[in-house]
Amino acid sequence: GVGIVTVQNISLGAGVNIPFTGKPARVRFNFSERAHPFLLTVYGIGGGGFFGIAIGTDGVELLEASLEAGASVALDLGVASGEVHVMIGIYYKMDAGPPDQISLTAYIRLGGSVEVLGIITVSIEFYLGMKYQHTDPDIDELWGQATLTVKVEVLFFSASVELTVERRIAGGFFQPAQLVEV
Image 1 (tube, one colour):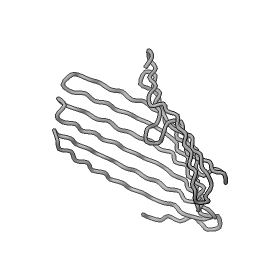
Image 2: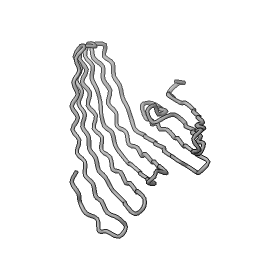
Image 3: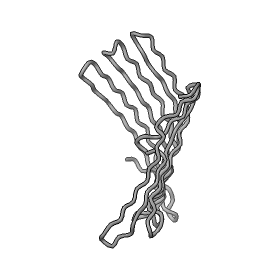
């Protein structure tokens, strides 16, 4: 952190895979990673993301990127501390398969946690996302997903409950769209 700006988890990566089985050689580059995205915050408002690409001698194998923005506020009163956050984001993935797949996901995350005396912690996270997926040859899908996760920790005991609802609207280029319950 420098002044009011905090930058975290920035990493650069590269890898080379040279198989001796006749398959094409591959190179991978990344700016941060999906599991550890970069974070940029100014006065509690900020975001993060990552970018990765895998290229072989036969073309692009995988391209994925994510950007997220929102706000996070934390408060520490000594005996109790907590935080709340609201984030919106977009995730893109192109996988050369087979089969070729392209997906685009837009989402919102809301959550928070509270800790009392370092003994009890309660956290809640709500995720709402909409995903468009194109699978070769002519399959387009639109998915909606909502997940609510509640986690309670008391000393060495912890329990978590996750509720998920998912809906899919499926249809090809030449088929009328239909609602399918999953």
